[in-house]
Structure formats: structure tokens, C-alpha cells
Amino acid sequence: MVVIVLTACPAGLRGDLTRWMLEISPGVFVGTISSRVRGLLWGRIVDLVKDGRAIMVFPAQNEQRMEFKVHRYDWQPVDFDGL
Image (cartoon, rainbow, N blue to C red; front, side):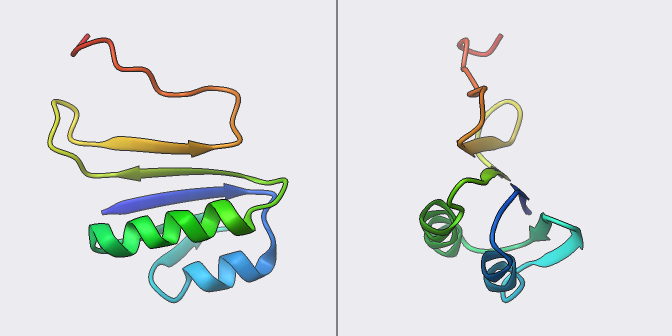
């Protein structure tokens, strides 16, 4: 399952995401999509978000079973070798 959170984004971008995911709250999208579609959607988000911000959480083969992608936020996830 993939979760995308958008803040201060254009309405057209939200409309694009509703083609593949469900918008469960304003700016919060949830869905089960392939890694290829996930990568293409993230590229589209980065291109269209303008002054807004975006976070994507998706499944991964690691201890926490998830990874993050962050665009235009003050913090970045850091890996401390499993700590």
C-alpha cells in the first residue's frame, strides 16, 4: 500500500492522483499500485507540486517494511544502519 500526502498543491495534481488512488482526506491518497506506476506518479508529483510539499510512504524490504520519499520538506529521513 502506498500513501501520498500533499500540502498546498494544485487541484489538477489531486485530480491526477485520484485516477490511481483514493483520496481519504484532503491531500491524503492511499492505494495499491505497482512500483513502476509509483515511480511515474512521484515524477509527476515533483513536476507539478510547484510551491507545495509531498511525502510518499511505500513498502520496502527492510526492517520497518517501508520507505519514504520527501519533496520540499524541512526534514529528510536518515538511515542509521538499523538503529
